[in-house]
Amino acid sequence: MKNNHGYILLEALVGVAILSIVIVAALQSVAAGLAAVEEIKKQSIAVTLAQKEMEQLGGRDAFKASESGDFGADWPGFSWSQQSAVVQRTNFYSLINIKLRVAYKARGADRSLSLESLFVTRQPAVQNWN
Image (cartoon, rainbow, N blue to C red; front, side, top):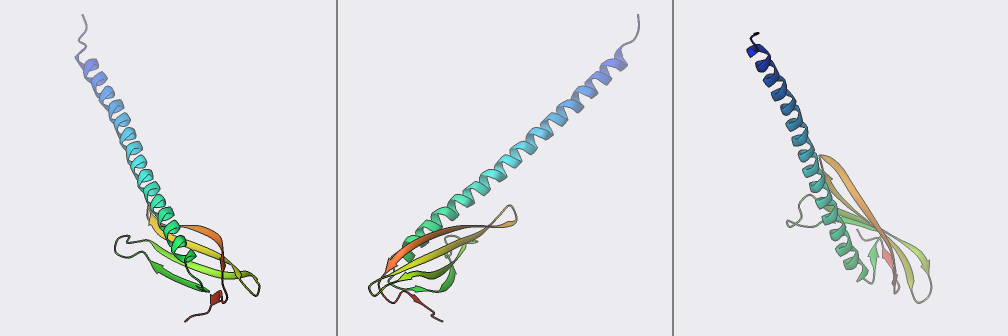
C-alpha cells in the first residue's frame, strides 16, 4: 500500500488557495459595491440640493447674470453656480433661462450635475451685479 500523506497535504493546499482567491474576489466585489453606493448617495444629495437652490432662485424678481456659492457647513464639498440669460423680453415680463450647476467630489473625481429652467419675471430681469 502506498503512502498518500503527501497528496492529502497537496490537495489541502490547493483547496485553501482556491478558497483564498474566491474570498478575495468576493471582498473586492463588496468594496466596489460600497463605493458605488457612496457615489449614488452623493449624487442623490446633489440632485436634492440643486432642486432646493433652483426653488430659491425661482422666488426672485431679478437674477444676477452669474453667481456661485456653497451649501454651508451642513453640506461640505458641495457647491453651486448659476448663469442667467434673458430669452425674451416684453414691456411687462421677461422670460429668463437659468442654468444651475452643482459640483461635488465622488470616488476622488470631480462630479457635477446641471439643472436648467425657465422663469417669468417682472422687469428688470437680469442684472450685472458686482
